[in-house]
Length: 221
Image 1: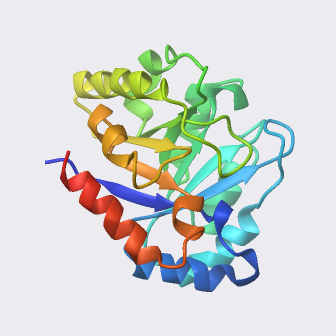
Image 2 (image 1 turned 90 degrees about the horizontal axis):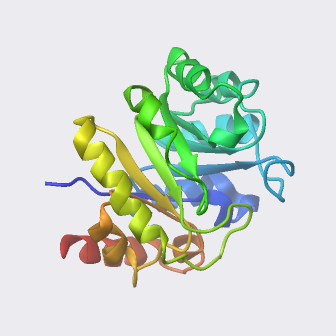
């Protein structure tokens, strides 16, 4: 039986009360916290760094899932590991040596992931499946929250699910971008098991009601 995980993205949280926000969303049933790092270089936005990760770590007992939208990545990986990240993922375009960057994450005691934008091909996966704990497929172009789900990502999800199953490895398949109650069933049916949702959760007054509704949809898969 598939284990489904819901990972609210703090990109859509109220940063003036971030500790309270992450405590509330975990109490509402979140399985992990998704932490979006943007550098205004690889993507056209600037967000948060290791100090914020370190600040929220004492507030929650679920994994912190750090998504690095930065280039280059190697310099900052150890900082996030030290700040309390449990999972660190990055884009292939952010590293000159992908295998080395994945090993760097693992050497610092974190789980390692690769992230693919909507138009990024998947061929890199053929060479690094043995170093992956997570594969994240972006279903929007990264840089901003609140975007709509790109439908052709469903075919990509199915393709990656087949690759994971063929490998026999325990690798999470995460989807980020436009995930909400009315499409999470379709995304899960394509093969995803971990779901990043930002404005769909933090943009609503009752976090638990949204997460519960998502779980009801996932139970139908």
